[in-house]
Image (cartoon, rainbow, N blue to C red; front, side, top):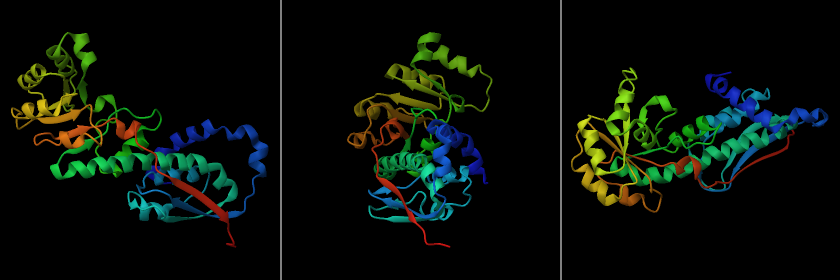
Amino acid sequence: MNLTQISLEKDIAHYFEEDDLPRNLFYLERLPKDLVNCNLFIKSDLILSGLPWFQGTFEYLGEAGFAEKAIEDFEGKFLEKGAVIPLGHLPFSKALTGERIALNLLQRASNISTFTHKFVEKAQKYNIKILDTRKTTPGLRSLEKYAVRLGGGFNHRLGQTDMWMVKDNHKAFFGGVSEAVNFFKDMGAFYTPIELEVHNEKEFEMAKASNIKHVMLDNFSPERIREIVKSKPTSMTIEVSGGVNLDTIESYLIPGVDAISIGALTYGAPAVDISFKFQRSHKA
Protein backbone atom coordinates (compact mmCIF):
# COMPACT_ATOMS: atom_id res chain seq x y z
CA MET A 1 0.00 0.00 0.00
CA ASN A 2 1.52 3.34 -1.04
CA LEU A 3 1.29 6.71 0.72
CA THR A 4 -1.64 7.86 -1.45
CA GLN A 5 -3.65 4.78 -0.52
CA ILE A 6 -2.80 5.17 3.16
CA SER A 7 -3.96 8.79 3.14
CA LEU A 8 -7.23 7.86 1.40
CA GLU A 9 -8.05 4.75 3.43
CA LYS A 10 -9.95 6.51 6.23
CA ASP A 11 -12.07 8.53 3.79
CA ILE A 12 -12.88 5.50 1.66
CA ALA A 13 -13.86 3.52 4.76
CA HIS A 14 -16.35 6.30 5.53
CA TYR A 15 -17.76 6.18 2.00
CA PHE A 16 -18.39 2.44 2.32
CA GLU A 17 -19.95 2.94 5.75
CA GLU A 18 -22.32 5.43 4.15
CA ASP A 19 -23.28 2.82 1.53
CA ASP A 20 -24.21 0.46 4.41
CA LEU A 21 -23.63 -2.80 2.51
CA PRO A 22 -22.92 -4.95 5.60
CA ARG A 23 -26.60 -4.54 6.53
CA ASN A 24 -27.36 -7.21 3.92
CA LEU A 25 -24.73 -9.90 4.32
CA PHE A 26 -26.82 -12.40 2.37
CA TYR A 27 -26.55 -10.15 -0.68
CA LEU A 28 -22.80 -9.73 -0.30
CA GLU A 29 -22.20 -13.47 0.09
CA ARG A 30 -24.33 -14.37 -2.92
CA LEU A 31 -22.61 -12.05 -5.39
CA PRO A 32 -20.68 -14.14 -7.95
CA LYS A 33 -16.89 -14.04 -7.74
CA ASP A 34 -16.29 -14.61 -11.49
CA LEU A 35 -13.72 -12.29 -13.07
CA VAL A 36 -14.96 -9.39 -15.18
CA ASN A 37 -13.03 -7.18 -17.59
CA CYS A 38 -13.41 -3.51 -16.61
CA ASN A 39 -13.28 -0.35 -18.74
CA LEU A 40 -14.02 3.35 -18.40
CA PHE A 41 -15.96 4.93 -21.26
CA ILE A 42 -15.42 8.67 -21.70
CA LYS A 43 -18.68 10.18 -22.89
CA SER A 44 -17.74 13.88 -22.93
CA ASP A 45 -14.53 15.86 -23.46
CA LEU A 46 -12.80 16.20 -20.09
CA ILE A 47 -9.70 16.37 -17.95
CA LEU A 48 -9.65 13.00 -16.20
CA SER A 49 -8.77 13.14 -12.52
CA GLY A 50 -9.50 11.19 -9.38
CA LEU A 51 -8.13 7.83 -10.51
CA PRO A 52 -6.17 7.39 -7.23
CA TRP A 53 -9.52 7.54 -5.38
CA PHE A 54 -11.08 5.22 -7.96
CA GLN A 55 -8.23 2.75 -7.57
CA GLY A 56 -8.23 3.22 -3.78
CA THR A 57 -11.85 2.12 -3.60
CA PHE A 58 -10.94 -1.31 -4.95
CA GLU A 59 -7.71 -1.39 -2.96
CA TYR A 60 -9.94 -1.06 0.12
CA LEU A 61 -11.85 -4.13 -1.09
CA GLY A 62 -8.59 -6.08 -1.30
CA GLU A 63 -7.84 -5.65 -5.02
CA ALA A 64 -4.29 -4.29 -4.87
CA GLY A 65 -2.88 -2.99 -8.13
CA PHE A 66 -6.20 -2.60 -9.94
CA ALA A 67 -6.20 0.40 -12.37
CA GLU A 68 -2.61 1.39 -11.50
CA LYS A 69 -1.61 1.45 -15.18
CA ALA A 70 -4.57 3.73 -15.93
CA ILE A 71 -3.36 6.20 -13.30
CA GLU A 72 0.07 6.26 -14.91
CA ASP A 73 -1.26 6.71 -18.44
CA PHE A 74 -4.39 8.84 -18.08
CA GLU A 75 -4.53 10.77 -14.79
CA GLY A 76 -4.64 14.52 -15.45
CA LYS A 77 -4.88 14.06 -19.22
CA PHE A 78 -7.35 15.66 -21.61
CA LEU A 79 -9.53 12.96 -23.16
CA GLU A 80 -12.03 13.31 -25.96
CA LYS A 81 -15.52 11.87 -25.99
CA GLY A 82 -15.35 8.26 -27.15
CA ALA A 83 -12.08 7.32 -25.44
CA VAL A 84 -11.98 3.94 -23.71
CA ILE A 85 -9.66 3.25 -20.78
CA PRO A 86 -8.84 -0.39 -19.98
CA LEU A 87 -8.60 -1.02 -16.24
CA GLY A 88 -7.98 -4.75 -15.87
CA HIS A 89 -9.88 -7.54 -14.14
CA LEU A 90 -11.89 -7.74 -10.92
CA PRO A 91 -14.15 -10.31 -9.30
CA PHE A 92 -17.71 -9.39 -10.24
CA SER A 93 -18.59 -9.09 -6.54
CA LYS A 94 -15.85 -6.48 -5.96
CA ALA A 95 -16.59 -4.60 -9.19
CA LEU A 96 -20.26 -4.25 -8.28
CA THR A 97 -19.61 -3.39 -4.62
CA GLY A 98 -17.17 -0.57 -5.40
CA GLU A 99 -18.67 0.66 -8.66
CA ARG A 100 -20.80 3.59 -7.50
CA ILE A 101 -18.41 4.93 -4.87
CA ALA A 102 -15.44 4.76 -7.25
CA LEU A 103 -17.31 6.35 -10.14
CA ASN A 104 -18.84 9.10 -7.99
CA LEU A 105 -15.38 10.13 -6.81
CA LEU A 106 -13.90 9.95 -10.31
CA GLN A 107 -16.67 12.03 -11.85
CA ARG A 108 -16.58 14.62 -9.07
CA ALA A 109 -12.86 15.15 -9.50
CA SER A 110 -13.09 15.19 -13.31
CA ASN A 111 -15.92 17.77 -13.16
CA ILE A 112 -13.69 20.12 -11.20
CA SER A 113 -10.50 19.56 -13.20
CA THR A 114 -12.33 20.12 -16.48
CA PHE A 115 -14.05 23.29 -15.24
CA THR A 116 -10.86 24.66 -13.68
CA HIS A 117 -8.95 24.13 -16.92
CA LYS A 118 -11.38 26.37 -18.79
CA PHE A 119 -10.53 29.29 -16.49
CA VAL A 120 -6.81 28.50 -16.57
CA GLU A 121 -6.75 28.58 -20.38
CA LYS A 122 -8.12 32.12 -20.34
CA ALA A 123 -5.88 33.43 -17.54
CA GLN A 124 -2.50 31.82 -18.19
CA LYS A 125 -1.44 34.14 -21.01
CA TYR A 126 -1.75 37.00 -18.50
CA ASN A 127 0.28 35.08 -15.89
CA ILE A 128 -2.69 35.25 -13.52
CA LYS A 129 -3.20 32.22 -11.29
CA ILE A 130 -6.63 30.64 -10.79
CA LEU A 131 -7.26 29.72 -7.15
CA ASP A 132 -9.89 27.64 -5.43
CA THR A 133 -11.44 28.51 -2.04
CA ARG A 134 -12.53 26.65 1.08
CA LYS A 135 -16.04 26.33 -0.38
CA THR A 136 -15.62 22.60 -0.74
CA THR A 137 -17.96 19.68 -0.15
CA PRO A 138 -17.64 18.37 3.45
CA GLY A 139 -15.66 15.13 3.36
CA LEU A 140 -14.32 15.78 -0.14
CA ARG A 141 -11.89 18.67 0.35
CA SER A 142 -8.81 16.56 -0.38
CA LEU A 143 -10.33 15.23 -3.61
CA GLU A 144 -11.62 18.62 -4.76
CA LYS A 145 -8.42 20.53 -4.00
CA TYR A 146 -6.44 17.83 -5.80
CA ALA A 147 -8.74 18.11 -8.82
CA VAL A 148 -8.21 21.87 -9.02
CA ARG A 149 -4.46 21.31 -9.29
CA LEU A 150 -4.86 18.72 -12.04
CA GLY A 151 -6.95 21.25 -13.95
CA GLY A 152 -4.03 23.70 -13.80
CA GLY A 153 -5.33 25.76 -10.89
CA PHE A 154 -3.77 26.48 -7.50
CA ASN A 155 -4.97 25.85 -3.97
CA HIS A 156 -5.71 28.87 -1.81
CA ARG A 157 -5.84 27.31 1.65
CA LEU A 158 -6.36 23.71 2.68
CA GLY A 159 -7.46 24.88 6.13
CA GLN A 160 -7.96 28.03 8.20
CA THR A 161 -4.49 28.05 9.73
CA ASP A 162 -2.49 27.76 6.49
CA MET A 163 -2.73 31.53 6.32
CA TRP A 164 -4.46 34.11 8.51
CA MET A 165 -7.23 35.55 6.36
CA VAL A 166 -8.78 38.73 7.78
CA LYS A 167 -12.39 38.82 6.65
CA ASP A 168 -15.53 40.91 7.27
CA ASN A 169 -16.49 39.11 10.46
CA HIS A 170 -13.02 39.63 11.94
CA LYS A 171 -13.14 43.34 11.20
CA ALA A 172 -16.65 43.68 12.60
CA PHE A 173 -15.82 41.77 15.79
CA PHE A 174 -12.46 43.36 16.57
CA GLY A 175 -13.51 46.89 15.61
CA GLY A 176 -11.77 47.54 12.31
CA VAL A 177 -8.97 46.60 9.94
CA SER A 178 -6.05 47.52 12.20
CA GLU A 179 -7.49 45.75 15.22
CA ALA A 180 -8.20 42.57 13.28
CA VAL A 181 -4.77 42.56 11.64
CA ASN A 182 -3.08 43.10 15.01
CA PHE A 183 -5.00 40.17 16.50
CA PHE A 184 -3.42 37.84 13.95
CA LYS A 185 0.00 39.47 14.16
CA ASP A 186 -0.10 38.71 17.89
CA MET A 187 -0.71 35.02 17.25
CA GLY A 188 3.06 34.46 17.40
CA ALA A 189 3.07 32.33 14.25
CA PHE A 190 6.22 33.77 12.76
CA TYR A 191 5.99 32.14 9.32
CA THR A 192 2.21 32.29 8.85
CA PRO A 193 1.31 35.04 6.34
CA ILE A 194 -1.71 37.35 6.59
CA GLU A 195 -4.15 38.13 3.82
CA LEU A 196 -6.57 41.04 4.16
CA GLU A 197 -9.93 41.01 2.44
CA VAL A 198 -10.70 44.61 1.47
CA HIS A 199 -14.00 46.08 0.28
CA ASN A 200 -13.13 49.66 -0.58
CA GLU A 201 -10.26 51.95 -1.48
CA LYS A 202 -9.85 53.16 2.11
CA GLU A 203 -9.22 49.63 3.33
CA PHE A 204 -6.70 49.11 0.54
CA GLU A 205 -4.77 52.17 1.72
CA MET A 206 -4.85 50.76 5.26
CA ALA A 207 -3.46 47.49 3.92
CA LYS A 208 -0.54 49.34 2.36
CA ALA A 209 0.07 51.29 5.56
CA SER A 210 0.13 48.04 7.55
CA ASN A 211 2.57 46.42 5.07
CA ILE A 212 0.12 43.63 4.31
CA LYS A 213 1.67 41.42 1.65
CA HIS A 214 -1.47 39.67 0.41
CA VAL A 215 -4.67 41.56 -0.41
CA MET A 216 -7.97 40.22 -1.69
CA LEU A 217 -10.16 42.69 -3.56
CA ASP A 218 -13.63 41.39 -2.80
CA ASN A 219 -16.40 42.20 -5.30
CA PHE A 220 -14.55 45.11 -6.93
CA SER A 221 -15.58 46.07 -10.44
CA PRO A 222 -12.92 45.76 -13.16
CA GLU A 223 -12.80 49.58 -13.38
CA ARG A 224 -12.03 49.93 -9.67
CA ILE A 225 -9.43 47.16 -9.86
CA ARG A 226 -7.62 48.99 -12.68
CA GLU A 227 -7.35 52.08 -10.46
CA ILE A 228 -6.25 50.10 -7.40
CA VAL A 229 -3.37 48.29 -9.11
CA LYS A 230 -1.84 51.60 -10.20
CA SER A 231 -0.66 52.11 -6.61
CA LYS A 232 0.11 48.47 -5.81
CA PRO A 233 3.44 48.09 -3.94
CA THR A 234 5.90 45.80 -5.70
CA SER A 235 5.98 43.48 -2.68
CA MET A 236 2.20 43.02 -2.61
CA THR A 237 0.13 40.31 -4.26
CA ILE A 238 -3.40 41.15 -5.31
CA GLU A 239 -6.11 38.52 -5.48
CA VAL A 240 -9.49 39.26 -7.05
CA SER A 241 -12.62 37.49 -5.87
CA GLY A 242 -16.36 37.75 -6.41
CA GLY A 243 -18.43 37.96 -9.57
CA VAL A 244 -15.97 36.05 -11.73
CA ASN A 245 -17.28 33.34 -14.03
CA LEU A 246 -16.45 32.08 -17.52
CA ASP A 247 -18.53 34.86 -19.09
CA THR A 248 -16.94 37.68 -17.07
CA ILE A 249 -13.36 36.54 -16.45
CA GLU A 250 -11.91 38.35 -19.49
CA SER A 251 -12.69 41.72 -17.91
CA TYR A 252 -10.78 40.76 -14.73
CA LEU A 253 -7.56 39.74 -16.50
CA ILE A 254 -5.88 43.01 -15.58
CA PRO A 255 -2.11 43.61 -15.43
CA GLY A 256 -1.15 43.86 -11.76
CA VAL A 257 -3.61 41.20 -10.64
CA ASP A 258 -1.75 38.11 -9.43
CA ALA A 259 -4.59 35.67 -8.84
CA ILE A 260 -8.34 35.20 -9.13
CA SER A 261 -10.12 32.98 -6.62
CA ILE A 262 -13.32 31.27 -7.73
CA GLY A 263 -15.46 29.31 -5.29
CA ALA A 264 -17.50 27.84 -8.13
CA LEU A 265 -14.52 25.70 -9.19
CA THR A 266 -15.54 23.26 -6.45
CA TYR A 267 -19.21 23.99 -5.76
CA GLY A 268 -20.43 24.77 -9.27
CA ALA A 269 -18.50 22.59 -11.72
CA PRO A 270 -20.76 21.19 -14.46
CA ALA A 271 -20.95 17.41 -14.71
CA VAL A 272 -18.89 15.41 -17.17
CA ASP A 273 -20.00 11.96 -18.33
CA ILE A 274 -18.06 8.77 -17.54
CA SER A 275 -19.31 5.18 -17.51
CA PHE A 276 -17.71 2.23 -15.71
CA LYS A 277 -18.62 -1.01 -17.47
CA PHE A 278 -17.58 -4.63 -17.00
CA GLN A 279 -18.11 -7.85 -18.91
CA ARG A 280 -17.59 -11.47 -17.96
CA SER A 281 -13.96 -12.32 -18.60
CA HIS A 282 -12.65 -15.38 -20.40
CA LYS A 283 -9.37 -15.03 -18.52
CA ALA A 284 -8.42 -18.30 -16.88
